Image (cartoon, rainbow, N blue to C red; front, side, top):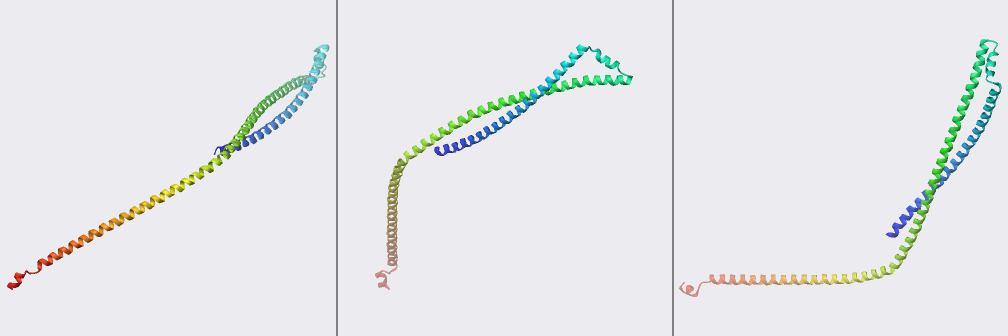
Length: 240
């Protein structure tokens, strides 16, 4: 029973080991996918850094140009308009350029921030996966030790079973002998009971026969007595 229990437990442990290995393989795939995703995000981030640097350099050149040529350049552009309509168009263009620069800078900053957040998230996921992997590896080692211990116990129980086989054979032989003795005693008891019953029946039959004989003799004596009482006496016959 213990051996069977250990073998069943060992089967369960082997199943756990198989499931654990599948989980580890899945975690490894997730880890590799996250690594590739991290590389892609890093490439996007690097490209965004290049764009940001280019834009920063362009903004420096523009600011430098503005300082060197004074801010009156915008005024000169506006004053060079041929008409009021041309003035409005130039003013609108200047405003659009400035607005476009602000929008592009804001959009780029948001993109860089989003990429940085995504990179941080992937790093966190990577750390979490590594932690899970360490836990599963520790669990795998624990299960392996349990499996080994169970194998050892099964071998011990098998040795105990082999050692007990000779004792079991002797015990069965002794039980068989005792069964023979018990059957002999039971047969003797049954024979004695049958003999006692037969003797009791014979005694009862003899007693019954004696009673019947005594009753018959008593009845015969009674009949004789009654018959004698009905016969006339000699004196009575002489008088007649």
